[in-house]
Length: 251
Image (cartoon, rainbow, N blue to C red):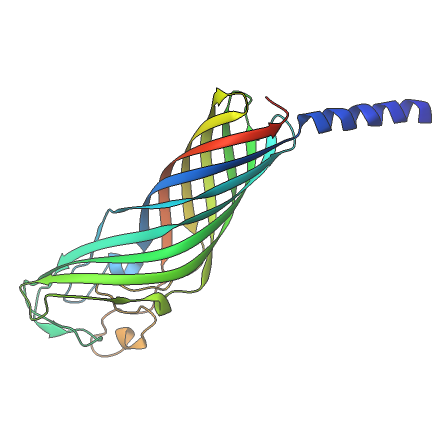
């Protein structure tokens, strides 16, 4: 029996070793991001808060290890920004809980920008023709944040300030990815990639006027600016390009 088991074990080990490969690469993502908060979406105060699309970016490095022709793990370190634009107007004169004075028919445009370091870890399934699907968690580290707003037709023209203290230091998201590796030469590949992510934790943050959503003054008074606190979740879709070099088993 031992004489049979030993050759089989050596054969399995040889096949597994042969099938393994290691990848390194650099990656760039063009990102469409949204900060979803139901108070912003359904504001019941004098102001109308409309979401506006805006593109941001991230860039960084990729490491991957393929256990076989079809399975592997990938980890990235990406530096970038998450942005959200807003616009709207006011139906009456008033004062926000933050102290900002606004006038009827006054309009505004604003933008929240959050700088992040993103570390996704994927389980990948490779189809053997260069294409793959990957899924996994992502840890996001928030390193800075800023807000700017421009008013038209009111007592204040514009303002901007740092909002890093309005966000947590980190968050957890889930990421789904679809990609394809196109061979350029030997172990060098050009990669195209689609990613979709959703943040499961509360980002807190600010509303379209730059008011800190953790500020209890927003939820008190008669009437309150917002009825009650609601969490903020980020969702994004991105298109990416990368250059990847594969060491080891070719497939």
